[in-house]
Length: 462
Image 1 (cartoon, one colour):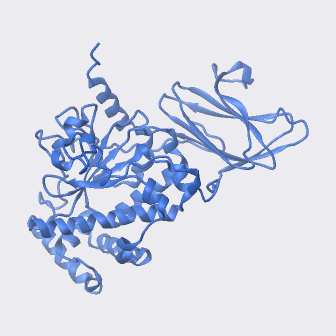
Image 2: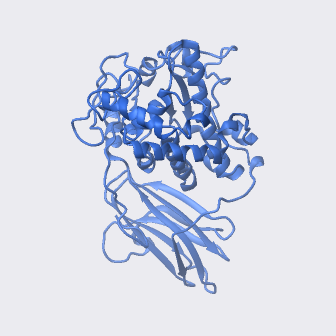
Image 3: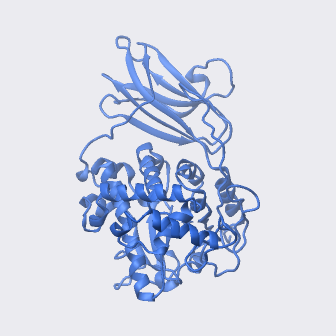
């Protein structure tokens, strides 16, 4: 696949273990065909975990091999200078870091020490008292709905209802990231409260990602970068806290979105992702007790006033009013620059080898507007005029010197897609353009899973 200014956009595939309950088909887990996930029965509430690195023990309290027990003791000795500064430095806490690095003492210690520095930098001991800006409180979706049958907190993230551009024009990237970190700390506190309430250790969280309404606007590069950074923070600072990440109402665009963030997830996290199909309302109560699940999502819980969405527990986000905007653009860094001569145009070709890829662009002109459109070549080879190609996005003039432009489209057909920067209407002024063009590939394993779920969906009654 070719992109302007540079190289191959393919990267070595990492297979993901994305599965659904009730034995509806399985994909190989990362690292080989032997590690497969299966739903052992219809009431299964947690993804099977891979074998512990030493013997067959899980590496959890009460299930340690002699080698793991020895590693824990040495880990405690190595951290004598840190243990007094940690709020809950019990064996459960320490084993999380050891499991995250397969009981490699040096790597586990390095990871934990970096986390301590992160806690200081972010002032995490006081983050629960920090209040984000009003726009984030009102329009950043999500909420704690309740607990699963084992007592683990259940957090809903409604990705599809988010207005990513509105949020980033109304708040800083740092504030949005800090809000996500605060959620992590809030969920850890909920685990501790549940442990005290139930008299047994609760240290994992069940997350549900609802993707209804997810579209190309959610693939806007600055928004994707926030999720990439968040998953990187999650992996580095909250290891072994995710029980399952359940995805519902996943659109056909999901494999592209997943491919953008999966490199920031560990293989263990990827194993815990569950994609539910069209019958998700029947399947979700197998993970979450109906009385802890809003009616909106297949449970029996309502607000005191009978609202099935449980708005007192879950924020559903929505479009951010422009009255909250603090700026009219988000600062972008562009990969390329070019000059479009007066009365001329420049065409950038991108070869798409299979349908389902997303073509994404950002550009800014300097001093004056610029025309832009997208076309599909009917034949490969020599340069084509616009009138000889299939029009995908009509050419129009953009005031990209005032507000940078960004956009994307799903490539429904393979072929050569041509991005045309047009200055033929200007016989006096040459235009300078800064731009980035990317081809976003779908994750093949999740794409096959989505297609399989679609194929099994019952036909509507005529």
